Image 1 (tube, rainbow, N blue to C red):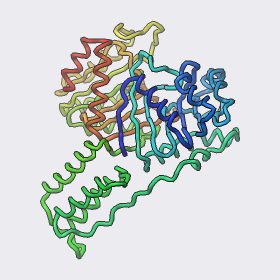
Image 2 (tube, rainbow, N blue to C red; image 1 turned 90 degrees about the vertical axis):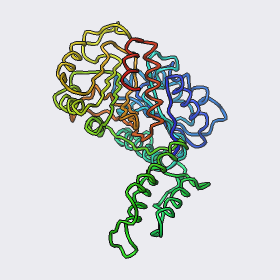
Image 3 (cartoon, rainbow, N blue to C red; image 1 turned 30 degrees about the vertical axis):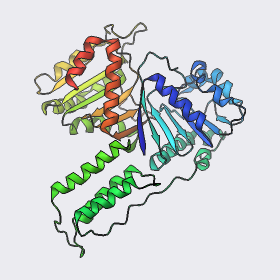
Image 4 (cartoon, helix red, strand yellow; image 1 turned 30 degrees about the horizontal axis):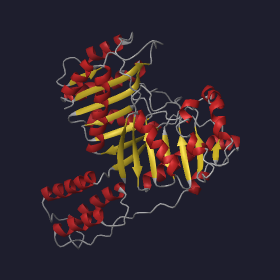
Length: 424
């Protein structure tokens, strides 16, 4: 699967437009908010009299949001190819766009309510080539719509799933036990570069494991060391390098309830650095468990960077980038609680004008999501449907970090220099 980073709101909107314009059978748009201004970016394509691709719109996280979307959504509700329920109750906070069964955008931006000129920084990733991840996104959208469909009966939850083109299925390669490890390397490398085959990276990763297992077994099935461990490491590194060079990456869909586990796991596993960016920062998310896990990471010498756009506690209508916020005491307490560690904690004390939700682990893997990682609600009553992608790619991680730094340089140059010093 080809994975490309999308940096900044203007580029996110452009990608949405390209997906909508290029859809042949269907486009599935998931966005919690709809506004007249936000719809302007896609309206010309939806109103095209020659358009045949069906458009499914899933939106709304509560009754107030649904009511506010009533007027702008009426612009598209009357179009014959648009399927929209003004009050379907999906409670979707995710922001995704899925074109046919081939391509998708997963973003942090509310692209149907914010325009490309939005001052808030957002990011996303595009996926091309079909495969299991696109299937997972379509099934996720179906499950989000299902409760409301059962209640309202306006349209069937499997309409867009059934309409998708059949994606290629990739089975694990049948590998004969090779006489030499070199033959194994060529077998798998050949599959990676084979013409006409859409490589599903999750399956390819499994193939690496299967191939390695075969390499460590003799033909009679008894475990025997047939190759050096260094050769296995070299082989796997070659695969990783090939994937990066071809803009492929291993991708995993992250559902609502998995986000907190990903955050804590990243802090526990980090060897070098963890960056967490969130629209809001709030007291519930910085509780005792988070602080203990944060301190353990810092005790190992890890650099942890926490970035936020605005406080969720004591919100101020006039809060803006570069101006101190009264929630500063929350951050001061957090810093005091982890004093004496060998690592480094960096937290901005002023709003940075970011809306993106990101986690970057060791500058090598990235979580792009709709979930506010520094303002999660630790309760079974949290019922918003969130979605993220975990991407193993140094290329994507580097693009996300670079985009953040560029944005912050324009908002808070002094803090940007601090960030440069700890993430370069």
